Image 1 (cartoon, helix red, strand yellow):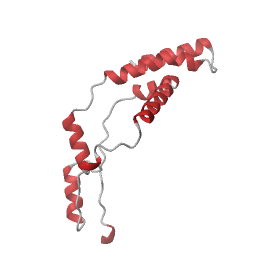
Image 2: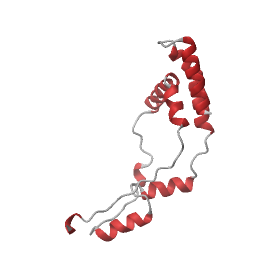
Image 3: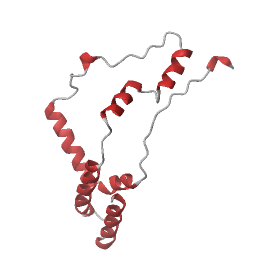
Image 4: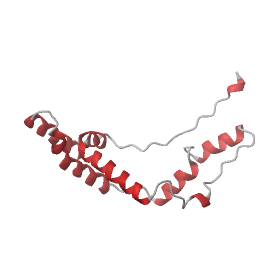
Length: 134
């Protein structure tokens, strides 16, 4: 759907000509892009919990490898006391949300291009090197 939307935008751009008016033409494609984003299934809570537990490691084996090589290594959980704290006020959160969605609408061809790329899940890995062994 994203590739079709992008192709339709390119067709509309070539028919109308390039200029500032393309920002207005991009708005319906931004709505399509948002619909594509919201229709995708979200990660399950179990995946999310595992991801945050391992961060920045890619697997439990990576954590174990570092733990065995680094004396005194200890991975700690995020402090529960900080979980409810806010960085921004609710008003500023809404302002940033509105601003980002307006930019999403105006620059929807870029978002559609990214959404049309093959989807792959990135899993970061931490490589431990033996710096002192050379």
